[in-house]
Length: 172
Image (tube, rainbow, N blue to C red; front, side, top):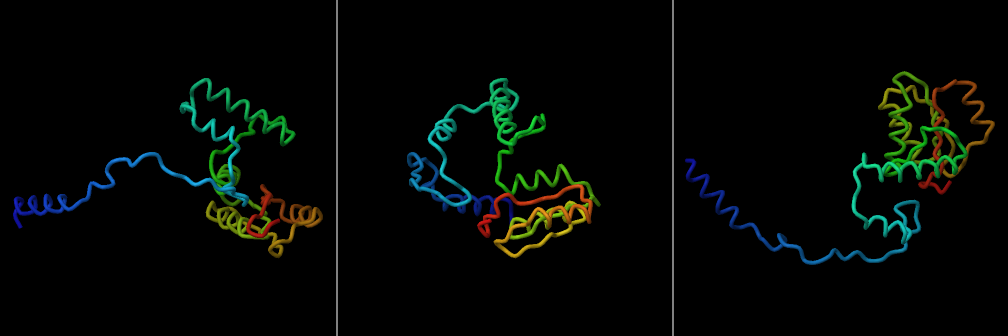
């Protein structure tokens, strides 16, 4: 097939493409819903208003001031003085991966409380980061006692003990 023939075929194919979706049809219509699950959740009107403000770059002084204020609130909430307290803009899964990726070194022991899908995901994730994963298992919907946690830490002496705060797959 010659270049001219290919060019003609390409032009014919392009002529068949519809322009119907090329132009905007007005604002996107998003229905109002009350979300009451573990996520996503409904946002407070103050949050929605903040999202409509102009964007700031991550190195702009006003952005840094906002992040400092958020970090201070997190330090208060968790009752810590740690300067390393931070917020992750992402899903819960992104937060779990950030924690494992930044805290676990290859070959280090990590005890993971597995009592639902999120604990299973962390155990799998830690294995992918080449951690020595010890799964502390409980039936779905059950929690771990302080005695069980202390015993696992004493026995395995892990670099990390990872527990899911809200195992939304089971309601615990």
